[in-house]
Length: 97
Image 1 (cartoon, rainbow, N blue to C red):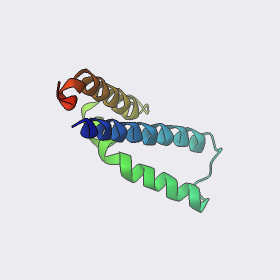
Image 2: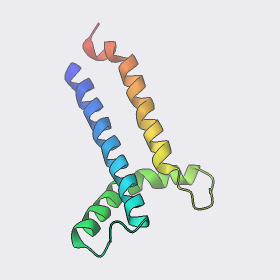
Image 3: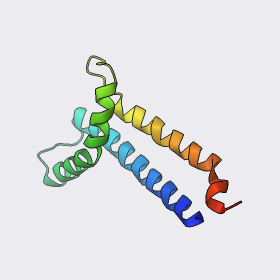
Image 4: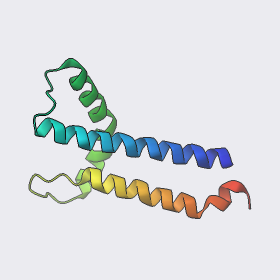
């Protein structure tokens, strides 16, 4: 069971990293540091959007409209952090104590 705990924490860490990469890349695209006409940038952007849009769309349905401000990544990061806290506080269940 300890392995399951570590795998779950690893998955949450990877999702956290992907969300941070998506947020930073969106800033770089909006400030025209990165250009979507470059094939590598477009492929990475499309891949990140395909990974995260199912998560973001469910959160956007619940959140009220914020006038162009997208809080879905922030809410997702807070949710991931909350899940990490819950898993860490219940680590004894995974270790069999």
